[in-house]
Image (cartoon, rainbow, N blue to C red):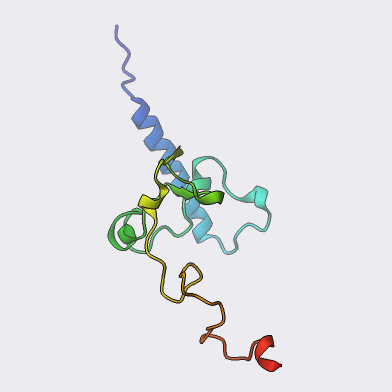
Length: 124
């Protein structure tokens, strides 16, 4: 006689993820957050964002669609990987520098209008 258990691996993963969301929800509803690192959730709950996104959309959709790929990582030395795979042309994933920012080739490092107090070199 065939087994009546027709659960699939997707069902188990869905159940595990639902349990992780419930664990995070308990944290959100608690009076205080855990003080010790060991008291924070483990397993799948460890990788969920406390509070979730404000708009309920996953990363890469809605407002975050302009921010870039979620799995893009910049490495020391200028390398770039996406999903753990190093790219041959990291410059394909580099935008223009922000004018006046630290990566702007015309930035001299001295123009800081956002500071309200004099810098040491300006006091001399």
